[in-house]
Each structure stands twice: as structure tokens, then as C-alpha cells.
Image (tube, rainbow, N blue to C red; front, side, top):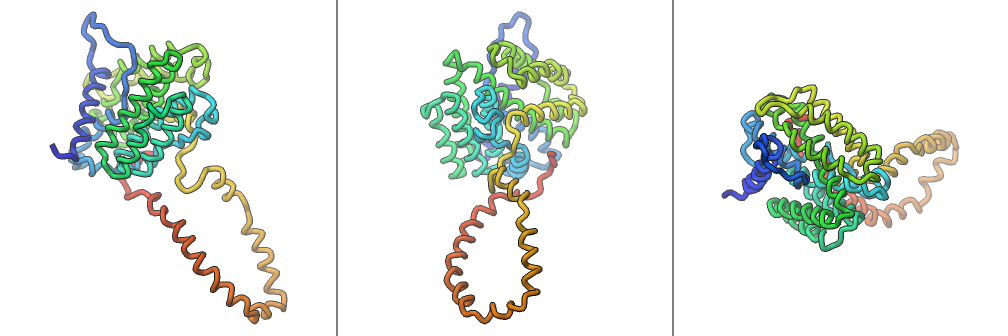
Length: 363
């Protein structure tokens, strides 16, 4: 099999498994598991690809990478512990944030964004350590980064899946931490829903909208959220999510081949977006942290410099300055030092801008 299509094939197997949870009607009397499965945004993204390939004349992974890179840049959130709602001290928010960053990592991987994938992996590791995981469970984080640096995308995809599985397994095996596993899956589902609904809203057709059909999965979320410990259920955000789950189910519980209405797609996007923003309020900033950037924008030093500039020309002592020989010596000495400093600063700049204008506009 062509290596280029292996990732798609692996993802399709995940999609089929997820679809059996989301779409098949249960047989009479069949006993089914009430534990949430390990789900990924890639399931829905591959279904979107399959629905739009003919329309967009796409047939390979690489042809989608620029679109996913744009989706990642528009959707990713800053998962540094200090940026999580609660400043990294609220384990409920930390677990939800870890799930969001897991979805971000998949988008970065699909967009072939090495820097984005490495950043997401590092933040996943930081949050997981805060939740009590050890280096033993997080060994795959370094593996993901190594494969990403080598552009070994299939290996990075598999390592990312193992990383998520190891963290969830650790949490599920520790009874007092099991609720955090539910919150991680919930956070990843909300960020995935936020991204996918933005795409479907812009590329709406009856067929594409049916991808959102997943009443049984929402039922699983409802049961698992209702079973969370009382101290977690007291959290205002968890209460709001629990209240909205029945309405979310109502809007995605359509017939097997029926569309999800466009107004419902928009409502779902706004709902998921609102929840994600309350967990991770700020997007990633590759150039500088948010606070210094804001301070720089607000500070008005140019106005202060303008005032003396107006006074200086009026002074008759101005011609005396060019006569001084010291001015000629100064530029010669610092010039070689200044240039390398600028060159080093400019090196990462080409990474930041997007590669090209994609086929959809998300926000």
C-alpha cells in the first residue's frame, strides 16, 4: 500500500469503529458498554474528506494538508498551564484542556505543522504531569516530537494515539482519577465538534451534515457526565455542559440518511465554541506572550519622542553635531554585532505565516 494513504486507511478503521457507536441502531436486548471510548477528531475529519473529495478534486493526504494547517491556525488554543481557566490549579479545567490539546495535536499533524505538533505535545505533557501522570505514561510525547521533526507522519500519528491511550489508561486504572479521563474525552470531543461544525457550516450539503449524526455517543457522554463526583458536578461549566447535552442530542438525532439542519449546525458550533473558550480563552502565540504584546500596543512612547524632535530643529546648536568625529567611530564598532543579532531574530519568522489561502474560510 502507498505510504501516503496508510494514515487515511488507519483513520478510516477508527472512523468505522466510531461510526458503529454513533450510527448503528442497537439490536433488541443487546448489552452495550457504558464507558466512553477513546475518540478522536480525525474520525469526523476523514468523513468530511470522503464527502468533499469529489467536489474539491482531492485524492491524497498531501492535498488536504494546507487546509488542515489553516484549520489548525484558526482553531488551536493556548494550552500552557498559566493560560488554562484557573491558572493550572483546577484539575477539572486541566483535564478538559488536555482533551482540547489532543484535538489540536491531530489538526497540527494533519496540517504537517511540525512546530504546532511539537507545541501541542509539550502542552499535553505539562498538563498530564499536573494531573499526576509520570514520565512512564508520557514517554511517547518525546517520540511524537522526534517523528514530527523527521516528518514521519504515520509514525507520529501512531505515537500520538499511544500517548493519549497511555494517559487515559493511567487515569482509568486509578479510581480517584477516573473522572479526569471522562473530562479529557469530553474536552477533545468539544474541540473536535467546534472544528468540524465550522467546516460543515461553510461547505453545507445534506450529505456532509449527516456526519454530525451521533445520538448514541451523546447518550454516553450524558451518562458519564451525570456519574461524575459531586465536587466536579458543582463546577459551573460542567453544570452548563450537562444542561446542554440533551439539546445537543436532539439536534444530532436525525434519521440514518437525513441531514442535520444548517441552523442546528450553526447552533452546535456556537455551543462548542462557547465551552472551549471558557476552558482555554486564548489562542497560541508563537511570536510573543499575550501580556507583553498587549503592553507594547498600549504604551505610547512614540508620542514622547515626537515632542523633543520638534524642539531640536529650533535650537541653533544643531550644526555642531555632524562636526564631531565620534559619530563616525560609533557606527563602525557596533555594526557587525547588530547585524547577526537581527539575522538570528528573523530566522523563525517564515514559520508563522500560513502557506496559502485554503478552500474554506472558518471564522
